[in-house]
Length: 113
Image 1 (cartoon, rainbow, N blue to C red):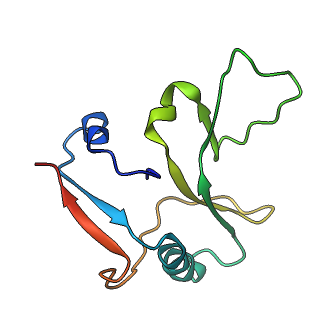
Image 2: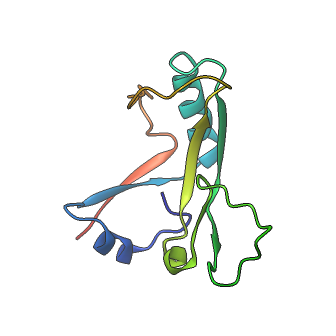
């Protein structure tokens, strides 16, 4: 997801002709967290904008969390991520599909015209 509406982002993804604009991020995040809670009990849920870094200017002591950091060459994407971290000893086992119900109160569909 991106933090800002930018029609140019359609060019970065093949075969994409529409996107959701999330009008209420906190409500949307609540819906996602709630829907995932039964499938991922005990997992840590987090959402935040991605932080971008210059790989040539990093110190050796800099910790990079692969879930929330990305090379600065992608900074124009202004990405936002929803992530889940498993409890100790739990191994992820594939994709999860979430039923969020009607999202009309917190998203809008925009088509690439």
